[in-house]
Every structure is written in C-alpha cells, then in structure tokens.
Image (cartoon, rainbow, N blue to C red):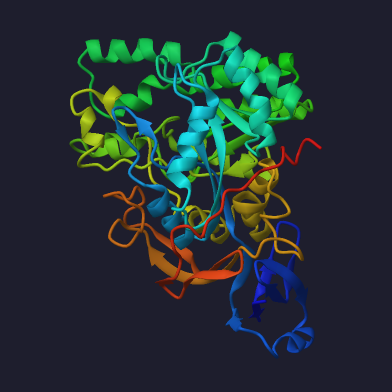
Length: 466
C-alpha cells in the first residue's frame, strides 16, 4: 500500500473550493481533511507533496484528440506515446481519442486498430469514441456490442464528402440506433456538400491561399448543419453532442434547442477562444499552420463563445488535437488550400489557456475545472472515477501554480510538431506536479512518466442522461 499526502493547497472542484489536505492510497483518493486531521496521515506516508500556494485540481479530461490519425495522405504527427506525454505536461490525465471505421471496413476492425496503436504506449489513461464512416446494417448492429465494451459514443461527419461524410438518412439511422443502446452521438456539423462547391469555385478562380479555407467554410454552413443535426436528433429521440463549435450562428442553434429542453450539448476548443481567422492570412504560406475544421472565425465570434461557456450553452472545452508539421505535412497544400491537412496541436496547452480565461475574468475557478475536467468526465461516462477529487475517485491530481508566467512556444512544448499556434503568447498559470492514478508522472519540470502507464477506460453512458 502506497500513501501520498498532499498538504497545504486550495482544493478546487466543479462544486467547491476548500483549503484541505488530500490523502492518496495506492491509485485512489482516500480522504480530504483539515491540516490537523492530516497530521495523522503523515506517519508511514511514502511521499508528502507541498501544495502551499497552489491549486489542487482534478486532472484534465480531453474528450477530443486525434493521435496517429490518417488524413489527407498523411497522419497526425503525435503518436499515442508522444501525444499522451504532452498531455501530461499540460495537466491532462485522460484523453478520449477517435477510432476510425474505414469505408468498407467494420466498426470492430476500426476499434481493434486503435487499440493496437494505443496499448502499451500511453502515459495517461485513455478511452475511445468511434468514427462511424460507413453506416450500414452491419456497422449499426456492431454499435450495441461496442457500448457494452465501454465505447459509448460515436461520431458522424456532415463534412468531408468521399472521406467521412454521411448523408442525412445515414445519420438518422445511426441516431436511431443510439436512442436504443444509450450511446451519445457526436456530430461534426458543417455542410460538406455546399463547402465543396465553394472550394471548387475558389480554385477555379485562382484563389489557392490558406485564407480561402476560412472563406469557403462559411459560418452559416456550420449553423445550417448544426440546425439539421439537432432536428435529426429530435426525430430519432437521441441526445446530440456537437463538436468544435466555432461560429456564433451555430451556437445560436444550440441555445434555442437547449432552451426548449432538447438534450443537445456543445463543445468548443481553445483555438476558437484565442485565435482568429486573421491567422490564415499570414504572409507566404504561414497561414497553413492555422488550417483546421471548423475554421477559425472573426474576433466577434469569440465573445459569443465565451458567453456560451459562462451560460453552459457550451458544455465542454476540448482540443481537437490533430497536429501536422508545417514543413513536411501542411506544405502538401502549397498551391491548393484544400489539400492542407486540417488540424492543429493543442493537447498540452488547454488547461493553461482556460486558466488565462480565469485570470482575464471570463471564467470562475470552479467553472475552469468544470469545463476542463468534470463535465467531460460526466459527459463521456467517467465520473466520478475521473473529473473530481473525492474519496474513491482515481488519484488524477494536478498541483497548479496560478501565478507562474510562461511563454508558449515550439521551442519548449512537448508535442511532436514543428510549430506552436500560440507562439510567443504569455500565459499566467502553470502545472507544477501531476499525479496519474496516484503516481507522480511530472514534478517541477521533471517528467517521470512512462509509456504503458496509461490504461484503457471502459466508459459508462453519458452522465447527463440518467
């Protein structure tokens, strides 16, 4: 039995802030107590961690990552080993990645492929969603079994015709299946058919630069698809989770649905809160670094997204971490913006960027923890094992220094990518120590983790639907 005592910190969860000491026994939180009570824990303790002046928060849960993801003739640059190590550096102790069913392949084959990629390589715990690329009787039937194995959410695309795209009929059938087996349907909501028309028109007119990516993926085409996804979910009687919401008009669709009691949830990402479409117009080909989908939007959309986070019309901040190196991968789109691999790095910076929102007065400390840890844990069937600090929860704990300033840079980050979209940005707040299931995997700038420490998580169904 291993005993660790965390002393002198401010414990922050989604529901309370309390000065308390934390007792960790083996892999779980055993107790919270006053300093006087904690004195009784010290004899025989294997380690005592000093959290004086620090926040003690649950480890981050990033519900949207893409490690080793094939896309656009290449694959995302972070492996499960490098990507989960970077997550740990940023205070994230759980990721949920996307296993991909290939067109013509089975759901089972897709999941088995991702299990093989991740097993023995992850520094932190992980789970899987399933990307359902080929909706047919066989793949729909397989979903029931996958839910029983703890893969309780699947994703459909209204974008990328010929790659991941599903038409409305297939989406409806999948949602109907989810209504019966308790799964949560996730949707990438953009009108891919209309976007492809605009892409071809732009290229035909000789408009090939990265800035065109933001123009052809119009905010109204995100809003239209969001509206359509909501109506399909209503017809099916299924809950809906809309990923990477970037446009104010799409958020409006979520607000209207939620105001009438429809079980619809929205996710946004740090890039939409801190970066704007102007990045796509950087000189030369530099704008390619900022190509992601949904795309970055004008600054006025940021204000609405922050408001949505405060009002809970947006429930989760995930990263959509999907890094492609500029020199060898983004440059595949030189002369044709539509061939730039879509995605940006971010798994290492989510906690710090959201804390900057606290520093700037946009979020409370408890809302920070709720968005980064507690709500994604509940949303994806991991709470109270993950997402809180309470007796019986996994001892995924971060000691966080709210006053430490540091500069985000490719020169210091740990993601396996050759640029940083936030290059030169100073943030206030930094991870000091990270425990994953009771084991210190990062402390004071020293990485102590290892591949294979992370375990696959069998998830329950969405905690907001029971």
